[in-house]
Picture 1 (spheres, rainbow, N blue to C red):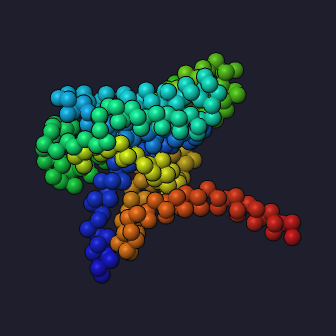
Picture 2: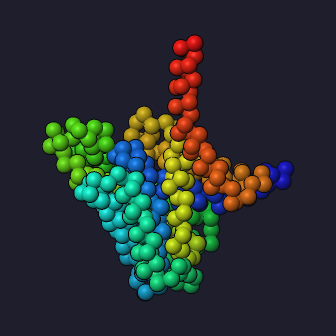
Picture 3: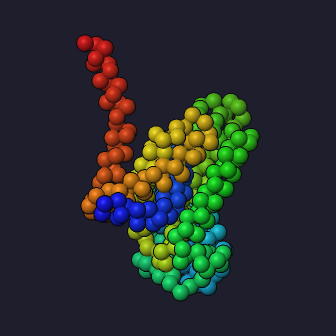
Length: 299
């Protein structure tokens, strides 16, 4: 009974977390599934969004303008990763690592210190309605509406000529030039978009929790991957709408699973280990299953 009570009390908090971090899952999904380019920049652009918005708000800028510029900073960071990958012929994973490493210094330079408090300062949620930060229900409703709008816009955009070209680059990069599709341009824009969405998540989190920290992005990539894998297992990815929905559904489910683990007595510090093992198992299981079938058939 106590376990169920603890889990029930955690549901609203983890629901907000799940919806907020669904933006990270979408930002991870675009490079991995749409562009077929592994990218680790999310580890750097998530705190970039938070640090940028915190620095701008404390400098007296309007929260809407601050959030918009933080998202734009994430877009530029994603573009940098794409250009390092394409122009210097560096593997996308290494390009992402280089970018997120440099962003650590950039974030420190932006804020001038490791963390910046935002308590008592105006933020985006106060601008919309001062009651939002005091109500988990209102936060859940607002984030759910924002995610529905984002998924709807992405679903529409990826079915336009530009969106189809972007998907074509990921599906068959060798054929794209033959169809007069400028692969470099679409990869740059695609990675920029993915990291802009991730930066938006960091900017919103900083304003909800009341501070930004240079280390707030640690583990975001693995969390995003875990959410994506769970979502694809629940809703599939055979259609574009399912692929987009998988990131949102998976993120919500992942944080509910995390709250259940905490209710069972698992230490919060163990969640990263469990998440990493889960992602490893999800990636390795199809390979191990295939080897098992091959051995059985040979026998």
